[in-house]
Structures are given as C-alpha cells and as structure tokens.
Amino acid sequence: MPQIERADYVKILERVADGSATDQEIMQYNFWITVVQEKGASREEPLMGNKAQLEQDILTGILLEIHQKPVAKPYKLWKSISIAASILLISGLAFYTFNPNPNELRPGFPKTEIINDILPGSEQATLTLGNGQKIVLDGVVNGKIAEQAGISISKTADGQLVYSVTEVAGKKDVIEADAMNTIATPRGGQYQLNLPDGTKVWLNAASSLKYPVRFSARQRLVELTGEGYFEVAKDPARPFKVKTGTEELQVLGTHFNINSYTDEAARKTTLLEGAVRINSKSWSQPIVLSPGQQAVVSNQGLKILKVNTDEIIDWKNGNFIFQEEPLESIMRKVARWYDVEVKYEGSPGDLTFTGVVSRSKNISAMLNALDKTGKVHFKVAGKVVTVLQ
Image (tube, rainbow, N blue to C red):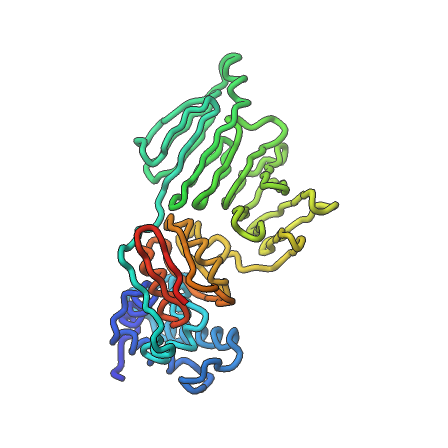
C-alpha cells in the first residue's frame, strides 16, 4: 500500500464517516486501521479480544497518528477526536472493516437501497401565543413579530426567538402576563429561544416548551415535553423550575439537558454545570445531581449514572454520537430528525453501535455508515425506512 499524507487521510476519514468514500479510499482506510490496531488478531476473527478495550486502543492509536506531526491546516482538538471516532463509526466497524467488503461476511444479505434521499431537519417551530394566535417561525421575516405584557418577541437573523423586556403599562399588561406561550418543534425541526430572564433554551425535534409571558416574582416555571437543553440565567431570588411529566426540576443557575420523549423507555436529566434538585411522586426524597451525572427514571425506578455529557448534548452541537447504543434507540432518533417512519423486517435484536455522524448530512449518510458494518441494511422509499436484517 503506497504511503499517503496524513492531511489527505483526514479527508478520507471524513468521507468514510459520511458514506461517500470510494472503494480505493476504503482500502486505504482499512490498511491504516490495520497499522494502528495493536491486538494483532486475525482479520477473520469476529471478536478480537475485549471489544471496549479494542475500540479504545484503536482510537488512541489513531489520535497518536494524527497528532504525530501537524497537517498543513491545523484541526481543533474536538474535530480531530470526532474524525478519529468516526472511523469507529459503528460498534463492530473495528471488527468487520478489516474485510474490504463487509457484506461478503453474510452472502445473500440485502444491501442498502436508497430510492429517494431525505434531507436532515432544520430550524422549524410554531409559537402559540396566550391569546391562541399561532406564528410559524420558519415562515416569518426577521425582526419583531409580537408584543405581550411589556415583552417584545423577535426573530433573529440566525433563526432564534428572543424575548426581551420593554415596559409594563396598564392593567391589560398585568393580565396578559399570566398568559402562557408555547413553542413547539415538529419532527424534523429544532429551535433556540431566549426567555425574558435571559435563560437560553434549545429544543430538539418533536418537542415543546410552555412558559408564561412574564415570570412571577417568586419563581420561573416552564413545562417541557420531548427534549431540551437549558442554560439558565442566575437569579437566586427566583428559582428556575422545569416540569416534565411526574418530575419537577429546581435550579438556580446551571446547564442541563432533559430527555422526556414519551416513546422512550426512560426520562433522563443530565447536568453539565451547577446543581439541580429533582422532585418526583415516584420517590419520597428529592435528589441532587452533580456535573456529569444523569438521573434515569423508568418503570424500574431511579438510577443515577456518570455519563459523557458530550454524547448527551450531541444533537444540540449538530451531531449524532453513539456509544454502545441499541439499534432501536438510534432509529428513534433518525425517525424524529428526518421525519420518517421506521419499520423492521424481523427483530432488531440486541445490536449496539458506537460512532459519530453529523446531523447536517442526508439520511443516506447515516444509513450508509451503519450499512458499512455488515450488520444491518436499509431500504428508503418515500418517508419510510425499512430495517433489513
């Protein structure tokens, strides 16, 4: 195999990650994995030692290779890590891509068929004002779009919804301040808004946030369905509270993510910065999370886990990051972001996958990346994705 400049190899890794690599580039990619793979196991051996340790060894080796000498245009650390992680795109990739054609491992297995590609989600949301008026935010021009109870509502050039305090004048404004607004994203949509107190909220696809036109003097209370990431403005006199089904979170100033989709088996609250207290009807005493901890509430009860927060807010940062994630969980995320229906031919089984894919890519990039493992394939027709196993 001829030598190749590392800068060119970084480009190959990016193409492998999004499914656009040529057969020759895949061969070069496989060769490099073989070079940095330190286990020395046979190419045909399906389980080369401990999987988690092998993936970590390969990732470490790749990072060392990338950083041994600088490329012409330096990459930020996260980009390097993302590129390196992307070659471990799926659990099993490190085990199966040693074979240039992973589909040969299962003769007769159907290949992925993309009859029509599907664009990724975008900035979309509908704002429902307290008086019932609905405003489709992706369809209105930038600038001021409404005013309520001394609060000006504007849409910025980069697609954010911003609430800013003007003045309260008269009894009518006081009455309107009790009204509730709701912002909702569809499947295939996401949105960011800045609340009147300065709190920033990012809503993932198929999510909604209900909040008052003006927060009270005692507390700041909002209601979330779906998934949202919060950067709460500090205001010790008025605790910030979030209701999600049976749970209520109370914070003073912090960054956290809540995943409360009804089609998920558990509701998850993850703390990135500060402190958060969670009250629930499901347990007698409130719990307090520390940064890096996640509270998982399901039919099996409550668990407190230590997690990698980068994986939790991947959607907010424009990526899918999977770490030993079940296929069904991945496909629920795909369904919400690409607004598709997912069907299965057979049982999804216990397949898990690890890797990084940009959310800005068409659905074909995501599915082709999964396809390259040789473990699962797909058919896309209209708005239906069929999982072939």
